[in-house]
Every structure is written in structure tokens, then in C-alpha cells.
Image (tube, rainbow, N blue to C red; front, side, top):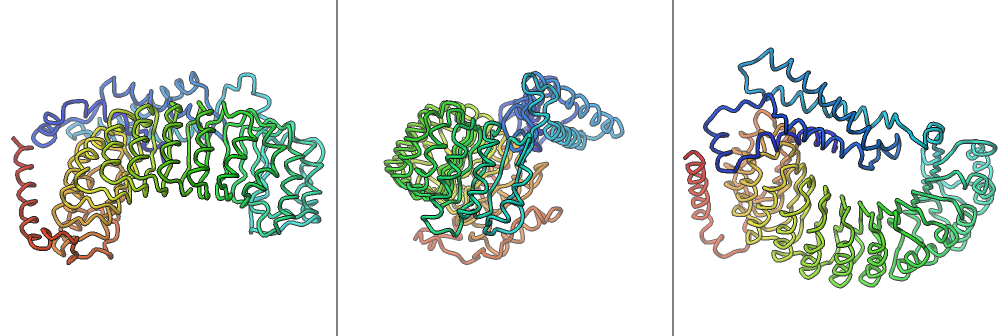
Amino acid sequence: MFVSQESFKFLVSGYFGMDSATQTFQHRSLPIKLWPPSQSSRLMLVERMTKNLTTPSIFSRKYGLLSKDEAEEDAKHIEDIAFATASQNFEKEPESDGSSAVQIYAKESSKLMLEVLKRGPRIKEDREDMIANETIFDISGGRRAFIEADEAEELLQPLRGPNSCTKICFSNRSFGLDAAYVAEPILLSIKDQLTEVDLSDFIAGRPEAEALEVMNIFSSALEGSVLRYLNLSNNAMGEKGVRAFESLLRSQRDLEELYLMNDGISEEAARAVCELIPSTEKLRVLHFHNNMTGDEGALAISEMVRSSPALEDFRCSSTRVGSEGGVALSEALGTCTHLKKLDLRDNMFGVEAGLALSKAISVFADLTEVYLSYLNLEDDGAESLANSLKDSAPSLEVLDMAGNDITAKAAASLAACIGAKQFLARLNLSENELKDEGAILISQALEVGHVQLNEVDLSANSIRRAGARLLAQAVVHKPGFNLLNINSNFISDEGIDDVKDIFKNSPNMLGPLDENDPEGEDLDEEVEEDGADNEDELESKLKNLEIKQNE
């Protein structure tokens, strides 16, 4: 997704660098020529593409990571082609505002960038021969099933004898003891050439004793391999399972990616992981999703995080971490200045941990995705985080703060943060209590710029007609917009008609409204008594807003 998003970033500097008042005046009152972009805008696109081409991703794992010099050369070439293509289109309609040329420029840049990512590096330097011969051995396809000795002999036959395999994936097949004994000598013969090992979900359905013995066999066979990627997810290991992999874990000093998701990582298991892995200095990706870690386990994980200065992608979602553990994790994350993606969803942080996290976030200059939903942040935590994000993370693309009991009180801080994030592609504030007052502030923040925006979710926020209409107006004309979700609100039938009319030329961009409650009440006495008056007052505010914008 980020490829198409990045292709729009040139617009922000070139067309929205003016102050908001002047910008709104020009947007409303004067025709603006969107083509050609300024030289600084073109250079910004080159810079952004260069950064993306040199950032590790699913493409780089498969095709290789470009060097900075090669990426910059490719980015310049992409921009030149895209600019020429768009200019040719603009020459055919010189009286237009250039919006179609802008879209062609963005689309062509995105397409060519994806081609480069899939091509991979042309300059291999010292690793040229190794990468050229790199192969992946993967038996994870097909149905999830047990694998016994006979089938293991057949499946693993390609690994016998000389081969250039550097990556293996045994996921989705459950190894019993007999199959493990077949795999053992094969793994011993190739372990020195392996760089990536995926053993996720490879003991499913086995009795505990057999599963632990299988893990011991694999661990001993792979001991001493120099891995950059290790995935042990979906094995319900617990502490016993972690220690069954002791031989393998103790020998790993160069890990860059470690995945321990859905593994029953308790406090004891988390401490075992921290104890067994000798070094995480090179670790860039660490995922602990869906475990029963709790506060004490989070304290152990925080020690590992603190020892991982290169960390770029950290996920500790759905791990039962409360306030104490949340504070510890937040303080440890403050040492990870290269963080790009942070996912802490579905924990019990509370306000105190939210405040601690806001201090850490202030150092994340490269952050592009942040997932903070269902953390019990409330207004104080949400405001503190929004204020920190506003002054950091200039390239933020995803902001998720759903389900945090956020009310209109915190909306001004959220809106100021959102307004500053011109690269934002996805915004999720669902299941809060922003109401119309908050929705209006958010829509104002989104109205100007935000040309990369493609999804906004403010469902279940007690929003009524005025807020719904203004949200719809704010996003409907964004060039790459895909979905507005305002379901499960209190929008009147007239308001539904208004919103549908706004999206009449692009109905697929409006999410379903089948769970909306036109007669809904938000339990506030004032709303119950003066709901109609409030609606009229908001309508008046909207009219005043439009007058001010046209002055």
C-alpha cells in the first residue's frame, strides 16, 4: 500500500506549504493550477521514493534491498518518466487545472516504483554471487496437516545433497518425532548456509511431550546457524517450549527479525526469551502479538527492547499488559529512535502508561504507522499522545486510536495532530465518544491537503447529521480516497440522505450505514432534552465556518 501512498507526497510541499488561512482562501476563491509542480516538490518526491526503496519491507525480503545510491538513481529516473508522461497529458488540455496530470504523475510514479521493488537491486556488491543463487524451500502450502516420516522423506528430498537454499519455511505442517528425525540430518547439513528459518505452527495437535522433543531436535540441528530471521509463532510454547529451543536461541547474535506471536508467552516465558538470546543489537523487527505476557512479562520484554537500538517494527498487541508493564515498555521504547511501526493494540495501559508513551513517541522521527486502539487511554492519555505526535513523526501514514473513551474534550488536540500529518493515509478513531463537536474538528483538520488519505473510520462515535455531513464533505474529493466508515452513529434519516448525496458519484467510497440509529440517544441529559437545539447550533456553526472561509 505504501507505494501508492508515497507517490502523492510531493503535493504537500508544493501545494500546501502556505498557511492555512491563505490556503483555504485560494482553495475556495481562486482557480489553482496544479500542474506543473515546483522543483522543490519534484525533489521531495525523489527523496520520499529513495527512502521507501531503502526501507526493509516484504519486497526487500523477497527481492533484496537497494543501496541508497542505487535507490536514488532509480527514484530520479522514475520521477523523470512520470513527469514527462503527465506533462504530455497536460499539453492536451492546457486550460484544465492540471488535476488529471497530477493523478497520472502519482499513478506512474507508484507503478514504476513497484516495478523497481520487485526487480530488486542490480548492484550486489560483495553479496552478488550469494544473492544470485539464493533459494527458498517452502512446504507450507496446501492444507494444514500432520507430517509423518514417509512424507517427510519425500518433501525434504530436494534439500539432500548440494543446494543453495538459504531460507526454509516448515510452517503449517505438524511434525511428529519420526518426521523430526528425518529432518534432523538434513538441517544439520544445511544450517551453515541458512539465513531465514520459519518454524511457525509446526507442532500443532501434538502431545506436549512429543512437541517438546520435536522442538529440541530442531533446535539442536539448527544450533550455530547465523540467522537474520526466525519465526517460532503459533506453537503454544510457553516457558517449556522457549527453553526447548535453548540451543538455537543461545547461538543467535545477528537476528534482525524475531516473531513469537500466539506462543503462550507468559511472564516466565518472556524472561526465558530475554535470558537465552545473547544479543539483540541488530534486531529490527520484534513481534509478540497475542500472548498472555501481563505486566511482569512486559518488564522482561522491555529489557529486550532497551537492548535493541536498531528496532524499527515493534508489536506487543493483545498481551494483557496493564499500566505498570505499559510504563516499562514505553520507557524502553524511548531508546529506539529508529522506530517506524508501533503496534500496542488491545492492552490495558490506562492513562499513566499513555502519558509515559507520549514521552517516548516524541523521539520517533521516522514513525509511519502507530496502532494504539483499545488501551484505555481516555482523554488525558489521548491528548498527551496527540500533542507529542503533532511535533514528531512527520511522515506518519497510519493513526489508530479506536476504542479509548475519547470525548470531544480531546478532539482539539487530535485535530491539531491530524492537521499536521499531511502524509496520513488511514485514520481510525472508531468506538469513541467524539460526537458532532469532535467530528467537526476532525473534518476541518482533514479538509485541507491530505491528498494521500484513503480511509477514515469514525464509526460508533454518537455522531449526528451535522458531523456526518461535514466528514463526508471533507474526504469525498481526495484523489485516492477509498472508504469513509460512519456506521453505528446517531445520524438522522435526513442526514443519511445528505451523506449519500455527497457520495452520489462515488457510492463505493461510503461504508454501510445499516447499524446507524437515527433515534439514538447518548445518555447525556442535555442531549436528551436539547438534541434539536444542539443540531441547530451545529448547523449555525457550519454556516459561520463557511462564511469565515470565504472572507
